Image (cartoon, rainbow, N blue to C red):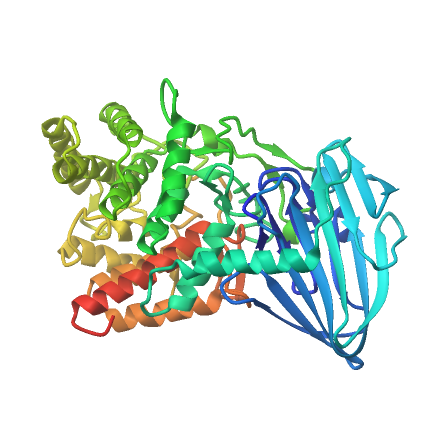
Length: 585
């Protein structure tokens, strides 16, 4: 992933940028090969001859280097997006000769509208401009270019020490081409930006490099103009190749963003936490009824879901969905995640906010009436509403954290009434969600289905980790939901979630298992699983939503904030448990 904190691009191992939406994360893609074929838009830069490539990020940044070795020599392609904060986002690609002489090919195929619209191409000064209703892209390079079957091609050679830059800059339609980007200056500024940001990480414990890489991913998924955090950079990457569980994740889920805020605060990034809290307050301000569970990056409420029928989908997985109908769902757990994030941020020295507490009291007022309702749950089922155990537990969290806000920080609120509601929820869960025959807390009231979210009950403080019911639930979840040591969310084939069964192991759930094992005192098991999960990351340390342990491939949208948050939290939990046990931090 490349990111300028407004949008993102994904670079394939073969040197092709296969996904990019300008000018922001949830805009229409101009490169959509990820969900189709090269003719749906991509930008390839690679040696013309057979070559072997290796990739890495420069330090703790999103500056990507791909080194290519051929029989004739070696070269490096440096890819990045300058986080300049201006109105014209850019992708910069610099081809650098390392040794010998390498023949290189650039093939630029721009298709606006998710691969549907071929632009008009024209030469304007030093720029080649591709224009359409959705905007214009301006290519600048000293390399000679030519048109070739509705693409723009450059063929050139680089010797050791030579550099050939390319810049692709977005601008609104019917405007003058944007000011040229100086590639070398932009590279220096971009590297300095990431070096400065990464240097602020306060975590110094085990797995610091892996934690920092995940923090950089979370920062890259942040829309700087508002502080909103998108769940992933992509849409419709399948949870099972050829399946229909394909969703658009380029929006700001309150759940994911709240969990991200907690991870950022733990690592010392209070500025980002404050920006997110401000985004939350602004986005939900003036809402006369109920906060949504998700919004657009600038706070948009309407996210209509439709299908791009002309795209064949990743690995022939259809439909390709744009927008997300889950925006209209009731998901009660979100209230608890938001309240916990507000509490954790305040507890870790983020300054108080009257407006944030006003929002918190409003949320609790809504929950007093709504917590008894059935909902769609954390997994956003498309079947009937149910009384999901995790939703009820997070309603308990909301009241618990509201009470703590009053008790620890002297904030005003009807604490006695909230205590009564909290106790009622706790008693109901213990009565209705516990299954004696199964020996576990189940997915929903009266169910015999397991759900990995039950592993979070000790983590949120609902019951202690040594409670017999928690230990029994942990054992049952491992027995029934484990696939080669990785966890499913639930049995999708028998869940009645409104969709065909079949999906990969859900990576956050596997990290939750790490946490549950660590809390249960099984530190060696927890560490072994954590290190297995680290090996699932791709060659530059990125995680998707799910994993197929049989075929050893990542599945689902990518990179996934939820997975990287879970990685960070597990690393911190392992360090805390070890320290409490008297070991080295």
